[in-house]
Image 1 (cartoon, one colour):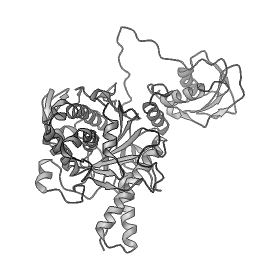
Image 2 (tube, rainbow, N blue to C red; image 1 turned 90 degrees about the vertical axis):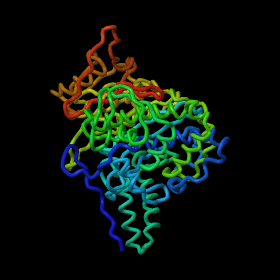
Image 3 (cartoon, rainbow, N blue to C red; image 1 turned 135 degrees about the vertical axis):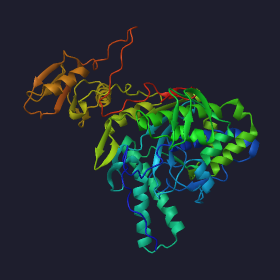
Image 4 (spheres, rainbow, N blue to C red; image 1 turned 180 degrees about the vertical axis):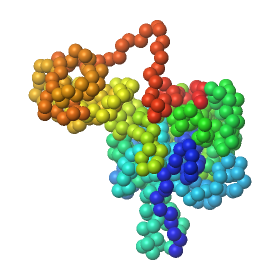
Length: 508
C-alpha cells in the first residue's frame, strides 16, 4: 500500500527550506478560465459546442449548495490555481514543458496558492474579482484548526486519501479523484465560512500550469508595465521598466516572481491583477473575438488543464456575460493586517469581520451597501465594541457596525433597545486609549461615561435618536497629502485603487 504524505509543513519566507516553491502564479491560470468561458458565446458559432471536452468535478449537488442555476440570479465563481504537475485528466506534464516554465520538480504538495472569488450580477454587465492571499491565517473547516488558507485543500486531500486506503481502497486513481473532490469541497466551505456567506459559491474552476503557456501564446501576448526593470533568476523574469508585451515563459515569470518584491505577496497579487487586466482586455478585443482560429486555440488550450464543477451550462453563462466589457471588471484584494509568525510559519494576519464587511460591500449589486471600508485605525483590533441600537432607524446600526468593522474594531453581538434620546459611549474607568480610538469614529463631542461594568479593552456604544451617523473624514483639498505609513511589520497595499480591466497599470 502506498504511504501518503501527512499535512504540509508551513513555508518560511526569506530563507531556510521553502516547501511551497511556486507560490502565487496560479491567479493567472484561474482567471484565464473565466475569460475563455466568456468566449463560448462566440466560439459556439465557429467551432460547435465548446462545453464538450472539459474535465468536471461533482462537488455541489451533495454539499448543501444551490443547484447549477444560481437562486439569486448572480454567479459566484471560485477560481483556483492548483500547483499541480498534471493536466486535467491526471496525466503528468512533459518534462520539457516544466523546464521551459521554470516549474522545478514536483514535491507532492497540492497547494491552492491562488483563490479568487468572481461575482457576476444577474445582468452580466460587470464583474468583481476578489483575491485571497494564500498565507491568510484562517480557521480551516473539517476540524483541521487554524492554518494558512491555501492548506484547506491539502489537509482534506491527505486526510481523505489516508482514510480511503485504510478502508481497503487500493485503486490509487480512484482514491486520488475522491480526495480531490473532498479537497475542493473543504476549500469552498473554508472560504464561505471566512467571508460569512454560506452557500454563496455556486461555480468552481480549477486550473494548473500547463495551459498558461499555450493560452498566452495563442492570444499573441499581453501588455504589462513595471515601475522598475526586473531581473530575477528563480522565476526567470527579465523585463525592462515601463510597458512590455509578454507571452509564454516571460508572462509566467512576470506573475510568478516571489523573491525581491518590496511588499511580498501583496506586490505579487498586484502584478497578477495587472496582468489579468491586460489579459481580459486582449481576449475581449476584436483581435481575438473576430478571429475564429484564435477562439478555437484558446478553448482547446484551456480544456487541457481546466476542471469545472459539473452542471455548468457554458452557453447560458456566456449569454449572461455578453454585456461584460473589459472595463467592467474590477480586481480587489481582501483587507489584511500585516505579517506575523505563528508556530514558526510566516503568515498574514486577517480580521474575518473586516473581510466580511468588505466582501459584502463589493457584492452588494446595487442594494443598500455598507460604506466603503475606511483605513484601519492602529490599535482598533484590541478594542471590542458592544453596540446597542436605540435609534429607531432600520439602517443606522448596520451602517455603524460596518464602519466599525472597517476601522478594525472587534464587534460583539448587537443588542436592540427601546428608543432612547441620546447617544453615549461607556468605557472602563481609566481606559483612555479605547475611548480615544472610539472618538475617532464618533467624534470628540460624543457623550462619554466611565462605567465599572465595562471591562478594559471594551467599549459600550448606545445609539440614540440624536445619532446622525459616525464621523466622516475631512473633505479633500487641492493640496495632496502624504499617505499614512503602515507599521513596519505590515506591508503596504501595492495599489490604492482597485485595478480595472482594460488598463495597463504600472506595478512593482
